[in-house]
Length: 346
Image 1 (spheres, rainbow, N blue to C red):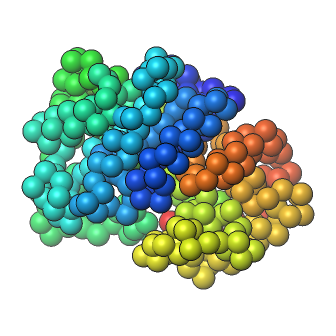
Image 2: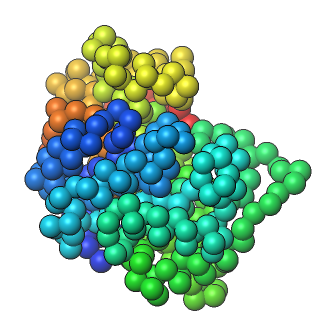
């Protein structure tokens, strides 16, 4: 397993990060621990979770994923070898069960969120603490067009960074990151941190896959010039890029069959592009999973690629893709499809 250095994180992290948003919903506690055991045994030292997991978020499952991870034996017997990342949610009027339905990125909310995560994870510190989405009105979670807000209530970025700085001083958090952010947001966090001597964000967790390469447009240059590495989520497009829906190998437990509201990766253009990538993979004697993940693993701006696996077999195939050399020829062939159907799942 290749290890990558990320600014601000003491340990090098595995190029594959295990995402856990299915733990407690699609996966039982026993299944989740088995998946984490296999990941650890195969060289993955980086794990990503969030206070609101599992997905889809619900009041009766809120916090369950962190609780499951907190009961994972290897996390405690090998704590110094594991990099654990979790997240605090941004403002939301829909999640009434989180902090009385009015979560914000201010001191009161962040401190309460951190203490909760530490307790559930049964640890004294969080290696990477991330803001799950911005406090301001902006375009994220698949929204392409920024709509000017008529009224906006937000927490200033400087205030949020000051709170995170306190947590670092208290040794409860080691490094900080962003998620679902725009180029303006990333650069604002960086410039304010430099101006007021506050913590510098180490990572940005945004979607990135064969079906969504929007990160390349405005953010990849930031990764190069500022050293903020991408932690890509949904590299498999909610399982669409495994090819199982094309081959009819999906099951009632497959994510899109369980949760039809997640249609981001199954619109007509995404389906058309997926079929082209599937045919390309076959011509290269690869599975679509191998092509999709080898593509992500090969990106220079990548700090780690977050994979989600609901079965041990999926996990092993995902890890195996690290052994595939993504050649310049393969890159050219992928780009030909991308130019015909660019970013069908933004």
